[in-house]
Length: 281
Image (cartoon, rainbow, N blue to C red; front, side, top):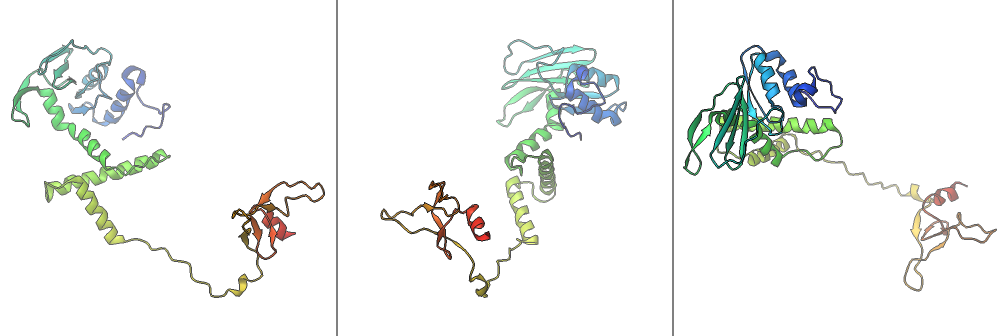
């Protein structure tokens, strides 16, 4: 894992040559090069330049491809079910039209197609690149889609909180896959999360807040000053009187009127700061 920390994030490989996604992919794959492995990638990382570089490192690649990548041939209009492919130096770029055009790059496949039966029972031809990608890499896309529906994230301001909540979501989803494989293959992710929450609450419970104890000693409140609302005027509205602190008797000007007064002194005072100033003189 590499945590992206901004545009100045340092990489071992030059992003100008391979793109930022290609630099990240190479840095993660460094311990596994020269071993004739095959890595499946999302279209954020793949490019013909990266595929050629990995092929030189005896590592194969297969993944979806963006049409705006450098050295990527773009086909003209295609009919549904049609396949077009381009090859160069053991690199295959294949375009297949389903509901929309799917572009795949691979250095370990050829351009063969296989017959498959769809959910509706219809038989159709699919490229082997698409079949292998859906079998070995589509689980990441599926897990992201399912976790997005019930994620814990609530727009935190700090990036590390977002990462922390995402890792919790990943752990919950992985646990759900293990539970479904071992106990109940028909279980739903939402119901699994609800049961998990109930079990956590049942084990640890809620922490009850202690209510403040009742103070029976009321004598200590006697003689203290408290704010109160002024009396109602003839229009049945609270009267606004001259604040004793704000009012300047020499000039006769009223700087502020207030709807509050001290109950003990029966003096009109502003809440802040005149109430405190008057009783500290």
